[in-house]
Length: 163
Length: 293
Ligand SMILES: Cc1cc2nc3c(=O)[nH]c(=O)nc-3n(C[C@H](O)[C@H](O)[C@H](O)COP(=O)(O)OP(=O)(O)OC[C@H]3O[C@@H](n4cnc5c(N)ncnc54)[C@H](O)[C@@H]3O)c2cc1C
Ligand code: FES
Ligand code: FES
Image (tube, rainbow over all chains, first blue to last red; front, side, top):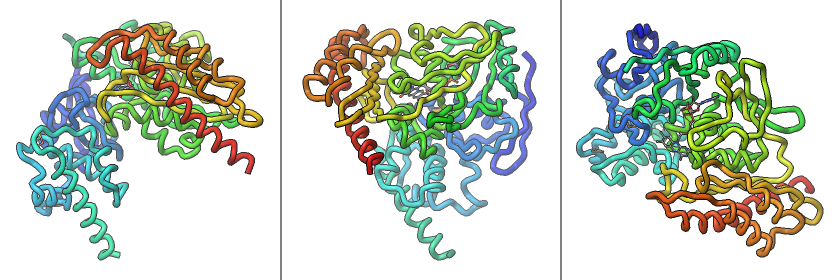
């Protein structure tokens, strides 16, 4: 089978790449675009390490075919910080020590940002259910949940100050 | 192994032609079953026909008379975002939103859940209880069939070569519905038993119509007509609920696996149907109160 040419937008930048039709979006990001922040933990939708935002909705990029991204908007962990300025969620993860090996962290941060972008004031239960598709083998989740709650509070504060 | 072809047709006719012309071609909705099966080698399609670029296949339409048409490519999270649908058919919408994680539900569709034909598919008992139908398009035109006519066995459907589901249709809500499942974990697991119940109440709160469907306890989701019949004509007292549970237990043909023994699944099916019926009843009372106020 011949390769497909796919044109898409990743973190606001136009991207073009060639791929086999059954290449996952995750593999295309990592191997064709050199965006290796998204990780493959399972390749079957269970762990969330590959989480990206596709046209405004968070999805497992291991379960998206790369050609499906044609003409779509993709946001990855690489687009979360602004230059050297970490996003408050990233900073709170560091401050809380919400990571050990760090393999799950890009997925957790992309998923947490997707939550806070549409729900600035989630309850702890909402955070836990929202993150049910992200697995972490190291932290026991508690520090992750606290980091997200504190980042939410910080973002609400920033918004009030900006208003 | 060679890579399959990828097509993203823009009309249903093109999709049907692509599928009818290649016996190895498979429709792709959210891919949360199909892509997993391709990765594991269980499924090796010669071509993938992505349905998501077909205009009109994504989204929810209100039907004249109060029903809803849900496009086959509509992800489960979009059902929750439709306030009118979520208010009318909470059981269906909740069932679809028990599937996987938010990441999975942003892709997964009810049509894919149905056409994957797992006996444990969560949205299917709720759709069957609701009396939902499917609009199917194929090389010989379109036909409308009840949801329960689609699954033919684990991983098998009654769809003919070249046929695709276009939309799932829910009737107007005249009462209320509910769906519950039993799983070993609190999230991200496959049902050991699932139960959907839909009820209509008449004057004085007497049940005038009821449908009961169960999942994960037989090769396909089962509509248990005797269980529905046991609920009709009374007010769902303990005796009626026990009679419905008896009918459900009698309809179980479960397997033994790591999630539960056949005996456990059968016992749980009875328990779950009673719990689900009580939720549907409570909702139906509330809806009746609201329409009389
Ligand atoms: C991590 C994870 C957790 C999951 N948890 C659950 C769960 O809790 N409960 C549950 O029920 N399921 C679960 N699933 C399975 C899956 O998500 C659901 O079955 C989902 O609804 C499938 O929908 P889809 O749109 O992704 O289907 P796809 O994978 O796109 O398609 C599934 C099958 O249906 C066919 N198909 C799709 N659309 C059509 C159509 N319009 N016409 C004809 N054929 C069609 C495809 O060819 C394929 O054979 C889970 C999956 C994952 C990865
Ligand atoms: S790698 Fe995609 S969910 Fe685990
Ligand atoms: S920090 Fe190691 S898996 Fe989460």
